[in-house]
Image 1 (tube, one colour):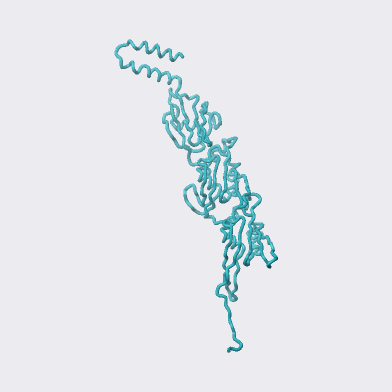
Image 2 (cartoon, one colour):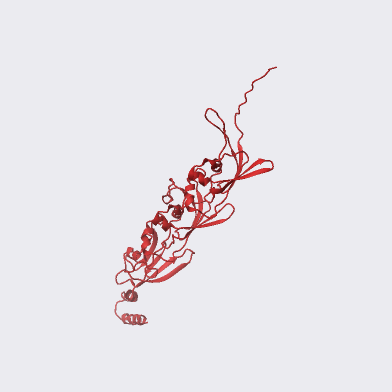
Length: 377
């Protein structure tokens, strides 16, 4: 029998904690968070912190309100306390009072913002408890873009098909959709976002403000499931066309076809700010004595799948004008018809072609009389 034994107990490995996360996080659910051994001359157990728990759940979504993160903690079997933490202050001031440690059984709720906050979204995205920048996000782009549809937005310059540093943003999504059309209203782009509870948030994005005032908050970070709608401009300012044509979210070229009485008919690729007059000149200009240089026909495939045909009066000295010198769009077809003189000449040649093979002149007067009767009508 051992009298007065000295027993030393050491903890080989601490039991991990069970934490529940819900709300505006990437992957809500129950998580097991390990405890870590502290360093120094007096080792201790290090409990996980609130930002570490959010990072474990994939990070906070862009719709999260990090000013009022709620932690529900059970004190006894019949008593529970609810604490609200402001992680925005933690990011701005470094106040460690908001960087709390978590005991076993804590329930963390990250509520949604009331509205989309462009100014804060980009700043929060740089934190360690936000969704990682390299995580792809599936978004939808509609309206005045070259290729409407669903896209997977990633960080980097997606226009060049590369993944480099950066975040999946509005501009990256527009690049994936082929860029904006020449009649896009970049001042009224609608960003639609849904929270975990199904609530819709809508915010207007002004990319003209981004271009002119370097307001980078307008190129906001995207969230999984975001919907981007680019409306049609009601008025086109000629002074803005050249600026938009060189923007990173504008297409490099548009494909149009110029056919009929031009010197080099066929399909051509032109800058997105090209007018109808410039497209005709790029096709070699009107054929002398054959082209109807007063009116051309413009055939356009509309976004809703319909086809519109219009007669455009030509004035080569006209600047950008929706009626007489419109901006061309992708897949436009411009038809340059024949002049009246060319029609007469072609009809005469058509009627006289069979006669030229007949020896003798008996049929010629008859053909000419018939031709004159037709032309007279």
